[in-house]
Image 1 (tube, rainbow over the protein chains, first blue to last red):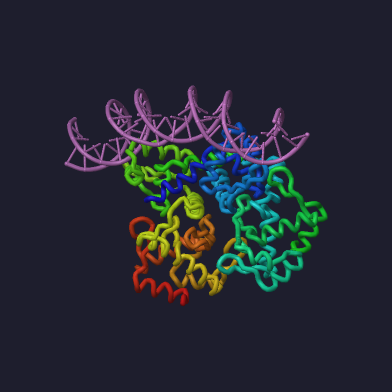
Image 2: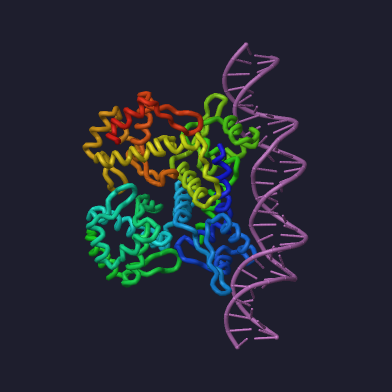
Length: 225
Length: 225
DNA sequence: TTCATAGTTCGATGCTAACCGAAGCATGAC
DNA sequence: GTCATGCTTCGGTTAGCATCGAACTATGAA
């Protein structure tokens, strides 16, 4: 069994409160500076710098220099997914009280998962996309011809997305709903589109808030209800 | 951000090599004694006992007393899933050299994932089940009427499985194939059935080995190739 | 009973790593 | 040039925890 130490190395990196705080702060896919992350994690800049160096060396985060700032972001959605799973585990094993504050409720309704829509709205959207035969289950998830036209109609540049190396569609398990929502390049593009159209906007944390008319437009687009 | 410490507590438990070794040893769903786990992890019994107490207190593993033995098993498939994801991360981030030994190849071909079939054979089976319309994508995965008859024909007692609280079908991400295989109560029952029929047997570690005739029967049952 | 096996608890040791102060670079503003 | 800001590196302290030896409890066998 030489798998143990391999897992342990990564898990140990996630196992420090300061680092875990930084990573969860990055879960919304944005890039943050070292100072911001230090503040969020509640440690000094020097300490944060050390942590970030470790995370970076392990390729869990990517760095981008910009002037005298250094921006950090998760190196991929798989990192965010593991964090989500760990939250799910923490919840099931009772390590965390079930929080039911208003903020928690907002997170469950709609939130950002790395760069795409998650929560009730996210699961709802994938369900609808399946019902309307916009996507089909192939190896993972695949866009149908009908789906292609549909999303192009929504203003998504499918051709461009297909050129990228990122999978177009990806089923991503939602920790609060325990069902899948739509990730991948398409999932990201859709969320961008919703925000651009003013259907929804990003609040503090990872909360996504739909405007009343935006929610109406969203439901109408996907024939929900 | 109070999510950080929550994640960190669990991740820290997985972040010790000895504990990680024990948990990976339990990933095949079997229950092992404290002595066995100590041996596998390469630590003394006292040390192992301490680790097991921590894992148990965090509800990551369950204990069962039997005479003067204490048997430990993972508290759920979600624990195994997180471990699989961590392995996937370790692989992508280059923390682990791509092992290509014969044992590794065997693991990729067919292995046990908590209690169901994973690896190439596992992914193949779910693909086939979809192609034959035995399962359909509902919220997660659902058995079709055709699928029900099919699996009953294979000797699976679907009615009994449905009475349990465990979901019948569950898509489970395969780290080596990066695609889904079939988990849930049905996935577990199918693997049991394959072994009972002598199509396959469990080797050391998590390797599942199909006999030549078993592989033939498997492919024939699912109309593969 | 006595002995053996399985496991826990306690105590001491030693290593690792998180932390921060202070100093050092690097970039940009003026 | 000077100064400020953003971040890293170095050094020293501290705290936590993994480890094991030794003693102890519990179950089973003879």
